[in-house]
Image (cartoon, rainbow over the protein chains, first blue to last red):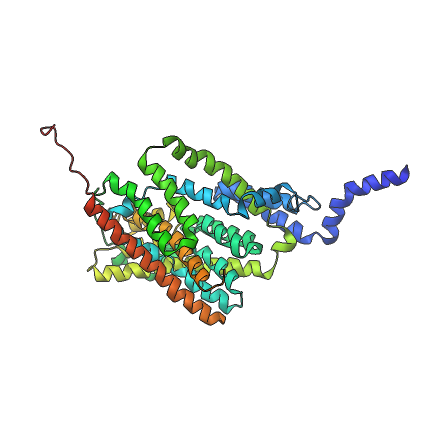
Length: 382
Length: 47
């Protein structure tokens, strides 16, 4: 009888005993999870993602909870939609349904800003390789520079699943920090005269037929060039086709709301579930966070420098600041450019031009990932 | 293939491929705009 009581009590005390004997990494991650919850709930930093990620992190790090183990709830979410890439692709349908590519279509050449804004990916890839990361891990780290959470998750879950936790958290954290990261780089690389360049208003020149055909053309052309990335391109363009065709308003609305919300919840919990202390707390994680920061900073710098080049080539008709919006963090990057433009000239409204570059960055990040995957496939590495 | 060769290949082929793909898409959008221009709005007198 007494033996049974002692055994029962030891079962109740096991979690606390584990925490104090070998649970230091779990204790640290409980603090990290708590911090994510605080940032999301109290500071409004990407709350839709950081709250589920933070809660997943807390749940998986409570000793002996087994939520992240075989058959555990968080593991089930992971297997259900992250390991097979379904969740990020469903998020892409939602993004496509939410995005108005109109400002980009008004001035298609602005797509090149979306290309320049991906340059950080490739420079960071070189950096990760120089630091000794294997090829596919380096690709997964560099893709943080896409500044696009679902793309980072899609690539990493396929080719470096053990890095999924740090890569996802870094990608979403830096996306949320775009308003802090961008302005100093924009100011450092431009003169006051360049920041004051006015670009005039954007005139409406795009027909609805063009808007409807655009997603189909991107799918076809992108798919032919980079078939390995077609799931990314195809799903974002499906969402946009539904939006622009206007024929399936119910599906568009559901994609924007119910699908996006439910998938975001499961995706966040699944990612949080990968942040188990013993697996997460490694020097590699710090390196990934460092390189993610470098990647996004280089994206912004490359965009601004490309903007300066275009400014010079057009005789000062393009404000180089809009180059900084050529990343995928939509619409935050465009808003930052608008704010910076107004800071130096109260009547300089760059928002629509920046929104064009920003949607170009969205397509650019997906195309960059798709092209990278196809090149890797061509090289026989995947 | 060593890391340096791999990185340089990705920079040139994947980076260049991204740039060219987006440039090509830009050209095609321009073409679409010419093929399907925005119809001028009808004035009250035309109706």
